Amino acid sequence: MRIAVFVSGRGSNLKAILNRADLKNIAEVAAVVSDKKDCKAFEIAQQFGIKTITLGESEGNVSQKDILFTFAELDIDFVVLAGYLKLVPVDVIANFENRIINIHPALLPSFGGKGMYGMNVHRAVFESSAKVSGATIHFVNNTYDTGKIIAQKCVDISDVKSAEEIAEKVLEIEHQLLPEVIMAFAQNRIKIEYNKVRIIRED
Image (cartoon, rainbow, N blue to C red; front, side, top):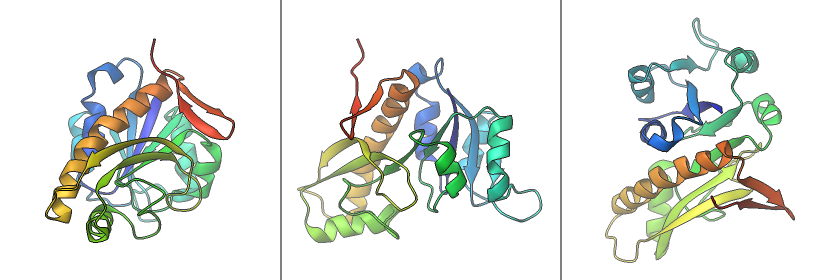
């Protein structure tokens, strides 16, 4: 399975994917895509010899209308949003139906939607006095954080003293969950039945 990973920040989830040893034989990150030319995650991609793509109309960038042609040239068959902060081009979503996922740093459907990313999410969780948080992986559609939920992992935050503590705990969970779900897709263990998403356990 050849993957394009969309990023906007430092790329810690990208690194978690690339460092997962048991993924290497069945899934390959073939491209890292960002809306920012100076995206920190590009440095990780370059260390691993992975092609980087900047979306935009400036010279040297790939326009949103041309990104599907680039993906076809690279034989991309799966897309992962790992800290990407913008809506993905609608053509990409349409062409990768049920093959494009996002990781969100809270337990959806709570604490999602436009503007709910990064520390904005963790501050909202902290201020709500929630006792648990976690990470959610969901299919991507044309609105923020509303696609069907694929997997969630919880973490106890009943004793935290700041939003930053929540961020640390949740990030650790993200780094476990995202590679696991990508592995399940690569092994064809994700099924949609009765309008629900199910992960079939490994034998």
